[in-house]
Length: 330
Image (cartoon, rainbow, N blue to C red):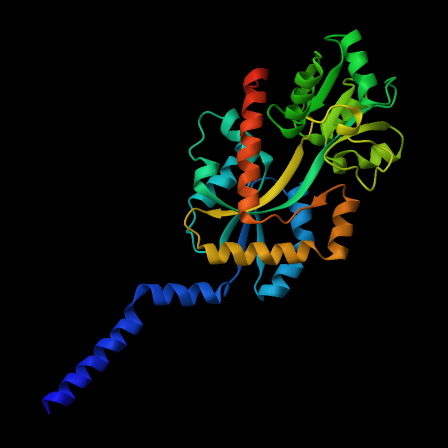
């Protein structure tokens, strides 16, 4: 009788350990991820490059995982409102940030009142897309190469103006990097958004704009604007005759606006890796690649560690550029 009682109590103890051990439940939940809709916060208004490029892979991700991937646009404060919402969200694998270069790299050096550190409070998953800056000039400006632009800017020192969609935006920083590398003095004319900046360039109020191709592609095709350089490692397939900045003697001028996915600190590494690998697979689809190339955007699909290294590398570069230029956010 005593022996049977001990066996019974042992069975009960084993059952309790199996049922109530926390790691067992957590592991099962991780293996089952995702089992409900996933929210992807984009900290800008709809229609931006990140928004467009994620929608191009949204259906494939939903088909692969069998759940909805819901885009939630939360704009404001240079993207900090949406980014901070993700930082404060539960680290359960159901809220992610699709942020731009600003969110991960430059805002921390521009905005002194930030209430979080993107390099400490977010877990990088993968860089999804990269839109290298295209150096564009008014069609009436008598330059066709980067060297000719630099020569004219030195000749007309302090007279040529460049447009941007606002202080501290990627086009503003791209132009500041060019100024420092080329040793030229240009006037900065900030607008409230990309569309007004393009109109200012078309109207001749400014002469230069360094932006993603998607903002100016139509006007380049119409001959109203001239693309003279691509600030990326490779030429764009839709602009095959436009050389890179490196091909024109300025290899340090690699700039643009990329978009990457991250999660709140504490999100399980298995979920991070699972999502990163799924996105890499989707981005390798030839049809998806072609759609990206048509937008002047490069599909990336980096690993979590590669994305983290890229963030750290660029943060150090832009911190110096911002300090030298004395840029102040609006």
